[in-house]
Length: 87
Image 1: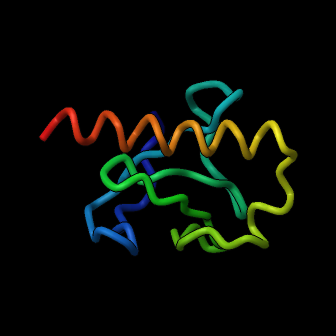
Image 2 (image 1 turned 135 degrees about the vertical axis):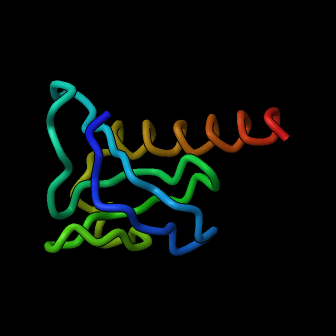
């Protein structure tokens, strides 16, 4: 997983310093408008033009088709399910 600038999730404030670009090779880094999930609280996040993470908005998600949105939703459910198993 490529390293990204250390930032904090705007929801849970946990430190995040890595992101995986799905469908790309392992060296690909996220760009503006790309979506990621906080691995701690499963909040859907978006990268701004300067690489800053923020909560994704409906507008951010509008560019994704139905299947992609379903994948994001399933990933959120999976993370939340796994999170509760770890505690």
